[in-house]
Image (tube, rainbow, N blue to C red; front, side):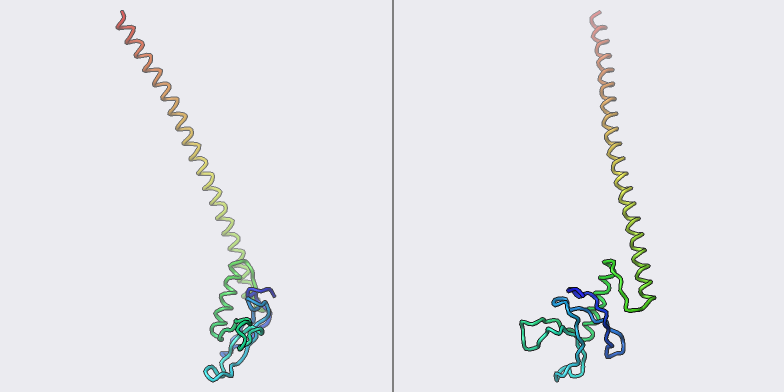
Length: 162
């Protein structure tokens, strides 16, 4: 598959008997391999590594994970894939169905959020229009008040002149 740790169709059985998905190396884009250590300090333990990882060559790919680290790495990839809207499950119809259901629910929630955001935008426009109307009404009242004051002052001036 593609680089970046995309899921591969292969699986391997872990030392605890559980199925572990073999993914592509995030650097090289080739499927990782499962190996059993022959080193004294880790003898018999399983590791997952890029086939391009050559122990003595520091310029080679450095992707290698213990079984526990690798299982965590794959879980993180699957979680990120579901979040991105990709759905894969190795033949398990129930998991695939649940994944599709989650994606559909996510789509519905996105639509609801978009509708709420649109309504918020409409309310902001209404508030802005009300502020404009308030300013216009204030101007009308001010002009009317100024006119009234002018009439009263004029009447006072006339009364004083008589």
